[in-house]
Length: 284
Ligand code: KIV
Image (cartoon, rainbow, N blue to C red):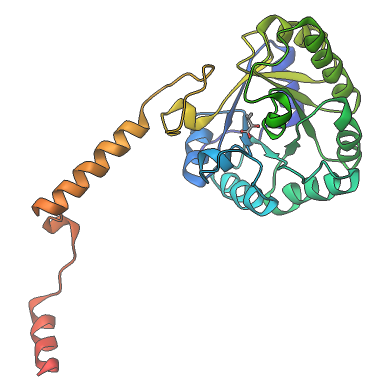
């Protein structure tokens, strides 16, 4: 296991102050969390994107609190020292401030997360403020917010027009005013992200397809390694084709079982001759 000290909110802000970019990835399971821990990733998001990447839904909307808690627990077991952010699923915070605080608390108490993330701007500032007032660090999410994809007209870049960009900037300020420690900007034009980053005073900005000028970067793990077969978003960079390796391995396995070259003696277990003879006697 790593020797790394626990990442804390002060240590993240220290990185920001030093101009050291923050690394953040999505993660949904124990082995991947273990590797991300070894790689020294600062922040891990147990995203409700797991609904698409792991559970095979077409959107994130069917994801439940139970799904999120179970996956967050597994990730925490694999990565004890990262700053772990639990993503609040659809309708776990939209109905009321009370529901938002209660469900945010579950991520902390049941999955040992360090923080939560929720989607939305000024209209969610009261949920954000309530969660922060309950002592739970909270991260905002602006730009393309997948839980509102229907209202946004699909999975599209947000803030290309000046008026929409200004709204995103105002939303960022509203979330910062509500106490967000960080804001994720997803699929927002680079220069809009730069303006928001320059104006952030008490929070830091993480980019997902929003350019290089944020305080940190986020990628979806499954996009990085060819593990999401349906499509590859433009902003994703592929660092290795694990999907191809897995598919080739599966085909080899199937053909070896068919042609009898698997299993070999090293793949099974033996019983001693004497025990086997005794067994035969017992059967007689
Ligand atoms: O659920 C998720 O993984 C997210 C990303 C799109 C950042 O919110």
